[in-house]
Amino acid sequence: MKSPRSSLPQLLAAVTTLAVAWLVTPLPVFAQNYQTIDPPGSTYTIARSINDNGQIVGFYLDRPGGTEHGFLYNKGIYTTIDPPGSTLTIATDINSLGQVVGTYGGGGGGGFLYNHGTYTTIEPPGSNSGDLYINKAGQIVGTYRDGNGVDHGFLYSQGTYTTLDYPGAFSTQALAINDGGQIVGDYQDSNVAGGAPQGFFYSQGTYTTIGPSGGIYTYLTSINKFGVIVGRYQLSSGGHEHGFVYSRGTYTDIEFPDAVSTVPLSINDKGQVTGYYQTSGTTDTQHAFVYSNGQYTSIDPPAGVDPLAFSINNFGQVVGYYADNPYTTNHGFLATLPKK
Image 1: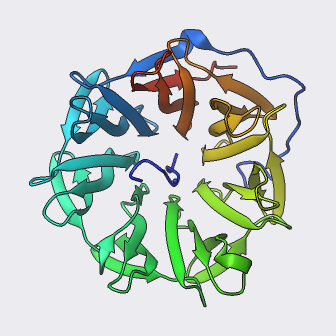
Image 2: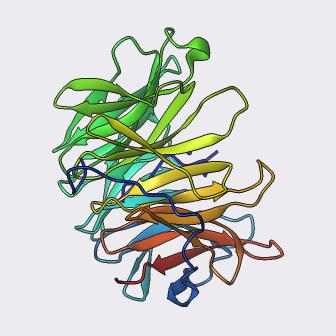
């Protein structure tokens, strides 16, 4: 639901225990449930987030190599999202009330909140340097960079900015917030070799480090309303990335069958996880996946290749993007898990 860190501008439980049972092979692809998401006139589309009403946000290019515009897709209707004076816009997250956040360029650039036709600039101290995410209460988290080039997380709530700095860290980034106001992100400090990023959980003024034992770095990407967290970590320099779920002090690996790298990016309130994986090293094309009730499903839209899933809502709807084959551009997609 809450979108993860992205590489685009350059990226417990509802039950008492979240049990994980591995399948030897993934479930069949549900190709009949795919829909391409492309705003009219777009030449390149990325779908970033979906809420429980099926509203989707992301961005598109208006021509090859052209300008990025944010968009909102709602029941077959596309609305372009461009703050006044912006020269490019990327919408990154939408909450259940239809409020949209993102970043824009032009006039110094920054963050924005789009609320049913009204734009509000989100300007923490310094300058925005990362994506924004929003919960049902309208609380927004993100990252800003101060005049010395140092990154700080921030929380925007009811018109007030609160800086989020992990104690002793020289860099902090806030990357997701749930409807209870709990926040996850990562930090860097001199106590970790090479300053490798480590994950943190923030709740009611208290910071807690989150990361599987032995990981040289950890990135947290999403948190649901029950405080269940997903992320990824690496065990050794040059090694592959492993996904995990953290719930009530317990870490459970998320490893797509036969994959060499698995990266969870979003978790919903039912504990369903989506993201992407690779099966044969860093040169392999990526595949999107959903992990649900101990089972893995590969998401491979039949119209293209290299899919990546960014977000899953509480009804099992997944959004992301895929590439043409042979590659010419990217398209957004909406996939829906079959009801059981």
